[in-house]
Image (cartoon, rainbow, N blue to C red; front, side, top):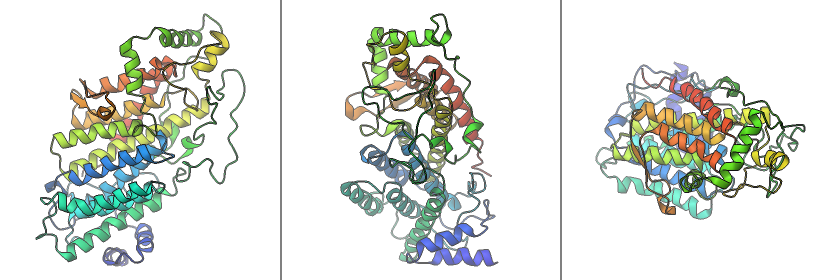
Length: 460
C-alpha cells in the first residue's frame, strides 16, 4: 500500500520536484511486471511517428555533437530507446518492463491503471527530456531543434494527438509521467561508468598508459592520438551481466615469423591496400561511419531500422520494442568489444606492416583509429545489430539502405541484414585498419551479444 501511494504521488506531481520524485519512484519496490496496464487507448493503436521522428533527430545530434565517438553514441541511443520503451510499456498490455532484467535496474515508476494516459504524449515528453540529457553539449541550434520537435509533433501528427481525447488533464498527466520516466532512467544511467567518459579523462582516473611489449598496441600515424576510451569495457552493460560474458575467440598468436598465421594476415592487409578493387574501396568508405561526419555505426543501423518501421507502418508499441532491443544489443556490443580490445591490446596493421613488411606503408583510404585492433568494433556491433533485426523483421528480409543518400553514396540494396553486416565487417579489412581475424571473430562476439539481448523478456 505504501509503495502504491508513493507511485501515485509521483505520477500526480507537477514538474516542480521532478528529480526528487523520480529518485523516490526508483527507490520504491515497483513490480517489474505489474498485474494491470494503465487505462486509455493502448500504444499499439498509435503510429510509430513520435518514435521515428525523435530517433531521426537523435542521429542528427549524434553526428553534430562533439565527443560522440561510436561507443558514446551507442550508449546514448540505448538510453533513449529504454526511456521510450519504459515510458509506454504500461500502455502495452502484452509487454513487460525490463526493470529486474537489466543490470542494477531493479525498479521503475509505473502508471496507475485508473488514470488514463495518452501514449504519444507520454513518449514525446519522455524522449524530449531524455534527448536533452543525453546530448548536453549539443549546439544552441540543435537544442532549439529539440524544443521545436517537442512542440510540433502534436500538430504534425493530429491522428495520434486527437485534441478531443487528449484533455488538458490527460495531457498534463501524460507529460508528467513521461518526464518522470526519463529522470528515473537517467538516474540509473549516471551510475554505469560511461556518464563522463566522453570527456578527455574520467575524474577518478590517471592518464592511460598502454602496456609495452611485442605485439602490443601503440599510438598510430598520422596523428598518434592517445587511446580512445580505454576504460569503456568496464562500463556496466545492459543485457550482459559482465562484458566478459561474450568473449571473442582468440586471434592467431602474435609472431613476426614470415611463415606464421599472424604474418600472413598482415600481408593480406598490405596487399589489399594496394590491390583492392574499386568495389572493395567503396565498401570501405561506405561503412566508415566516421564520427562528426555521420551518425556513427550504431546510428547507421538505427537509420535502417527507422526506414523499415516507416515502410511497414509500425505501431508505437512495435517501434519501442524494436529500438530497445536493437540499441541495447549495439551498446553492449561496444562494451564487450572494448573490453576485449584493451584486454589483449593487439597492435594495429599499420604498426606491424611498418615494422616487418614495408616501412613506408600506411592505409590509403582512412587513418587508423586510436585504439587496439582486436576485435573489429564495426564487426561486433554490425553482427549484433543484424541478428536483432533478422529476428524482428525476418532473416531473409531485403532492404534499401538510405543512410548515406545525402552524401551521394546511396541508396543501396541488401538481400539480408547478415549480408549487410558481413560487408560492414569486411570493409575494415579493405580499409587497411584491421586483420581478417579481427573481422571474422568479431562477428562471433557480436552474435553472442545479440543472443543476450534477444533473450530479454519483452512479452508476457
